[in-house]
Image (cartoon, rainbow, N blue to C red):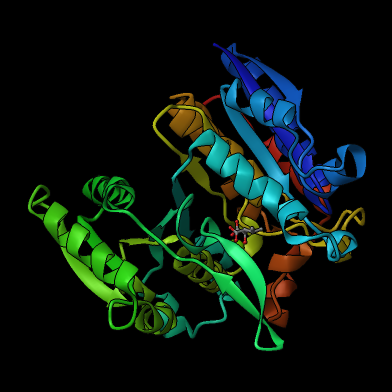
Length: 365
Ligand code: IPM
Ligand code: MG
């Protein structure tokens, strides 16, 4: 199959992790007889430096016209003083909205090899961590009006949070469908004791529930959910939530699996053209030092093959290669065990070596 992939290397560690993922995609293409072509797209701080805009329209068009987009990470302290609507992150938000990818899927799954890297007690980890956060991605407070006004001699900042029934319904359906393909349990997370948008959220979820009698729906307030994720993550199968709650909870969920560097994500809308990115940031403090963990990006490429290109065997082959390299004890700094006994049987590797090891283990299943 021929696929045109828009590639956004971005800022910080973005270029180094994406380069490793592309080497792996090339190998998969060679083994399975596909032709992947890559179109470079500038987005984030590098686009501000080059074009004065974090996502020029022609760059967005390249993404919309591709078969899918692979993204490293954007942002960094260099652009901290850029006005809000021109920040690198604004490019990412415009990309998500422009592509219409309203459904962000973030798996929180512990790799057995990395159980020791979880900050949770073994008794909790041993019960299992395997759930998915379905995050609404192009609505809510991220996309409401943002402004700062002078009022009575001081500045007042206003961020608007709104959700319509149809926006809630379409993400709700993704939540139910996802649960249907897994453990048939959906937990809808909101703050309905305070927010109107959350009361509407809850009402829509319950209306939808009658169409999915095979899925058990529960409700949870977001503060309680933050607590339950560290107290007993084994209770969750699929969590569906709004944009900002999903942002916060998915960082928490990734940490309990050992490292945010391991977690991929997919963002999809109504077409098969998706956006695939690791959930971590651009880590400017280690950029260019060959220390970054490329696995989150490599697994994002695997998700692209699985969900946008319908290539499950190819996706399995990447995931198996990652698993084998972890089995053999190779670890980047972020997942290197603190425990001395465990560390003695592990090998510390950099970004390039981790990529090369995974590449060596890519075999046709
Ligand atoms: C994420 C990131 C982004 C978000 C930032 C970089 C805008 O934190 O993908 O989780 O908040 O969505
Ligand atoms: Mg985030």
